[in-house]
Image 1 (cartoon, rainbow, N blue to C red):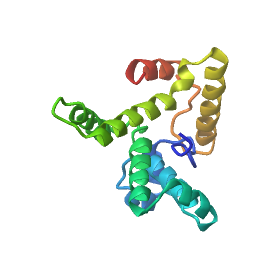
Image 2 (spheres, rainbow, N blue to C red):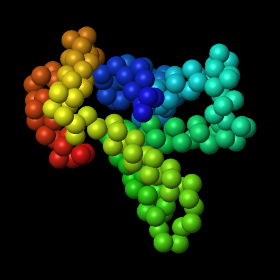
Image 3 (cartoon, one colour):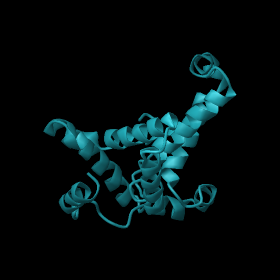
Amino acid sequence: ALVHDVDHSGVSNAQLGKENPGMAEKYRSRSIAESNSIDIAWDMLTDSAFSNLQQCMFADESELMRFRQMVVNMVISTDIFDKAGKEMQKNRWEKAFHPDNQDADLKASIVIEAIIQAADVAHTMQHWQVYTRWNEKLFQEMYRAYENGRAMKDPSLGWYKGELWFYDNYI
């Protein structure tokens, strides 16, 4: 949850790709913001300044790599506009919970991804003050992007309809 919006700038992945073709190429134009967040957070976690923390978290290289894969899967799962990614998640869910599957790790990973997706939008289900607090922060982030010429659309025009779309199509 701490990782998924690291360095979020209030613009879509499509806009990030236009502004930074190198970043788009690096992440194959998919889940650019999410992938960038992972890389920044991972670089911080694996910095030598945190070697004691790393030793507590990972007994060996295989645990480190397993943890990284889980972080990648969880953060990438928060990209609600990646249709191919959503289809892959759906297929992984069906595979994980097929009656013949006994892979507990896959089941656990899929459930954790669902939990992080719920956490990503949990403010919408909280008390009105919590909802408006986080929604205002998102709006301000998006409006700054618009004012700076980084977003084509003024978020104040149609914010209400956008919120309804979000509820109807994602929540």
